[in-house]
Image (cartoon, rainbow over all chains, first blue to last red; front, side, top):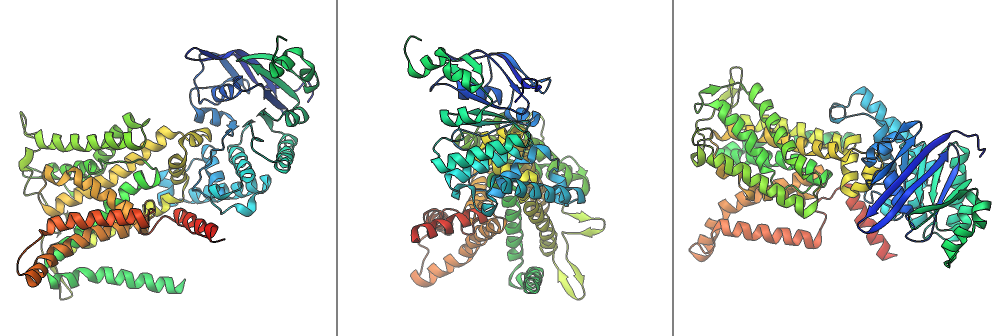
Length: 258
Length: 352
């Protein structure tokens, strides 16, 4: 991505403490529209904490986030989702006893309006909306490549397909930013390659992606820019080639005095 | 499709003819049928809260009580008020709905066992209120209850007396039967339509994984409150009908056992599935009545005297039925489709 692309998200001095542990310390980073932004770091560096703060699951101690030129309301996950940030979870969280299709249809909730009375009376607008929800959900299942499993329960999908379903459900909320928390965790090489294709496709379709990942090869190959966290602090932020050679990053990963 | 329509027509005809047949056996049986419908109605109301949204509510009878007392206070000599049904019934639903929101608001963060305990307490609080609101101002007339409550009356059409139409005598209970059937039809339609709607899916999503539901943008607070309020308003309507039918309400009718009974109907029949819930409610309403009328004569015929009190036997059989259901059909007699699918696929998995 060119450096000229406009900013989509700007996090300023985010801090979060759990008891005696400073999980995040003044983390600031900027994500540009249309890029794949990687967030890496050793175990316990605070990546997932940052994710959870950004998506409203944890309440930050200080700092704020500017998203699409507006202050982002971080007080609850549903507000963040409504503002246009969708996420997946490190340990997949699907609605296990709903079908794949229903899972994605739930994702449409935040962009649709029908209420109880619409549903009870089956008003024309409610039926039209319901049909649109179903259509869009099927499209998204096609997009991530699991349309043939549409009517299977989410819990019966293979691990890789569950990951794809979770992404489809996130896409259903029409995000401007898709935040993926270790999407390749537990995947075999073939599944990882497929996932990589999927994420590249998302970027080519204009979506901005924030990616937490342990698979360094995947991150280096896929991301436009990378930030590195260590002990809750950002120690580097640049294009992969530069980050890879940063002595602080090497020290953080390999240990030693740096 | 045509066969389905025919089947539906037969069921409808049977349901319409039922009170006429039952009247021949005894009016008591029509009353039993009415109570059974009322319990189906209650179970379907609670199904929204427990079956769909997965919020374990052990105090559901409180809303039933609110509806019943609303009718009793506004249509009886107690305050000398005799408001028409089209005022009281919606008002009962509204009060119950408010009570539902009052219960829902502080319990939003609770789940499972904790929610169950708080709702249980709420149910008891409401009953104790009814029991004690007789001094210094006599509002509920305490444990003595409220008597001589007006029956249902639509214009000049009075549900408490017998009318003859086309040479067939329709007793009061028979008329209530048709009214209740109509209301039941309404609650079934509501349940079915909500099941496959935006809100219904949001309820199930919360039941499945509340954090994920929040993360996809569902305002879980509002949606849960909605479930409580919806379920409660059905309880309120059922309560109003109960007061009108019985002509008498007292706190004794709204004990914890009733809440448990309604919950058991849902669990036995199949949580979340409308038809399962109906089956469960029918079973648990009618079997005890059959026992009541058959156990005593049977024992006298076989042993020459009463060995086991029907009431004791009833609880015993009830317990055995629940244990057996949980052991052999944990998702209920007639489970929700997704549970069923789950089971059959699990079986295929072991077979392969």
